[in-house]
Image 1 (cartoon, rainbow, N blue to C red):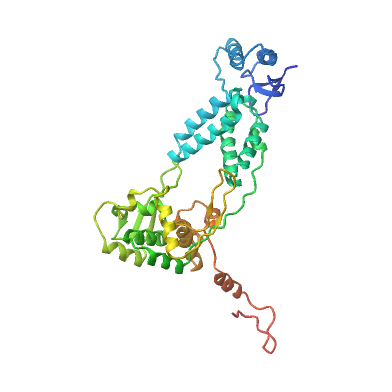
Image 2: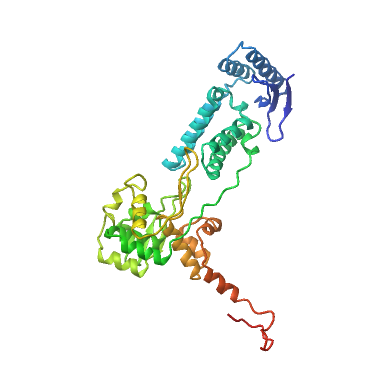
Length: 393
């Protein structure tokens, strides 16, 4: 039997009824009047009953409900299937995200809808925890990492939360699923000795510059390869650039990094007034078989530097490399930390938004940790010495 209830966070009555799949669901009636809300709840129940007996399709069911709500309130409600809602959410998100992020959202939602199959044509209010958990678990079986599975779940959480705010659902079923514990990838920085070996192995002058730029500026590969002379301020011995990775719904972030003497010397010897600093490399993509990332890996091979990998799992699993060009960004941050530069300054130089992110790029050397421990005073004097607990190394 259908019933109506007041939701604490809504001015509308909620209808509780058994849907076409035999599950008890809650749905907003969009009515503030109890009598009108009761009529809507009965329509929901009657239409769902007909659907269970095969007398009405899902599309007809939504049409009947829409007509009922229009007759009562005088307004045509917006009714969404799961597929319609997910795609409209992606379209809205794409307006406030970078093109790459928008494409990733779109691909994830289409994969989810493909997994649901015909069930994606159900009303959004019928989406449940089981649908989402089965999808998440199916992705894990293909070999993707826990982090990637968590990212998919977070996207669905975000998508459904907007539907909840618009009162298309009473709660977010994706929030009932816990995130998986993430297995840490052992990313590591390149040592100064390793960077020197790579420079020696590079027979391309542009690559020499890109490597020095990565180590002394801490920039990502795309920013390093595409830096322009207009971004270099020789009068201030600095470079000002916009990181390629930042949110498009916030004010664009720019970083100004002082130029290290060695990088400054390289740039002064090749100084021009405008255009790309590295004309050839700036034309190449980062990924792909002939892209910058794999070319840098070739330099690692020539320099005799091993990059241990985490083997791919399943058809869609990725091989994870512990060393790559991005390691120079880790080196930049970690070497500054080991030289005593504060985290606040390192965050400004690298462009990290939080200490938590910066912590992941900070690899403190054992000697630095040892020096810190040795600063503690002795609690007891060594045998044969006076009882002096002052600092000793």
